[in-house]
Image 1 (cartoon, helix red, strand yellow):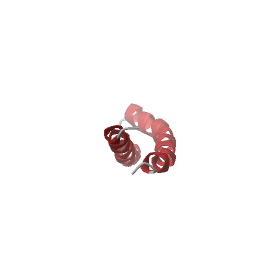
Image 2 (tube, one colour; image 1 turned 180 degrees about the horizontal axis):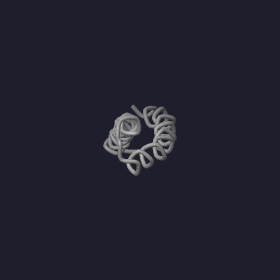
Image 3 (cartoon, helix red, strand yellow; image 1 turned 60 degrees about the vertical axis):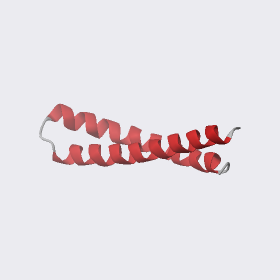
Image 4 (cartoon, helix red, strand yellow; image 1 turned 45 degrees about the vertical axis):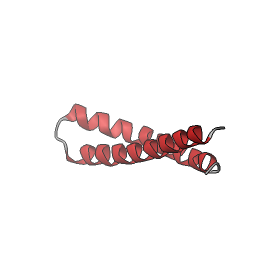
Length: 68
């Protein structure tokens, strides 16, 4: 694998982790603070999905970082 490909993979995984962390935080906050029942339901329903995605991408990170 070329160095630029490895760097791209590492950047992608780091971005996915950061984005999912931010999304989990935002939706967790929204599920507790919003008064709109549809938004609250959406946030409450999707936080576990985002946490699962975050867990998966976090598990992938060591495999990508091996090429550093």
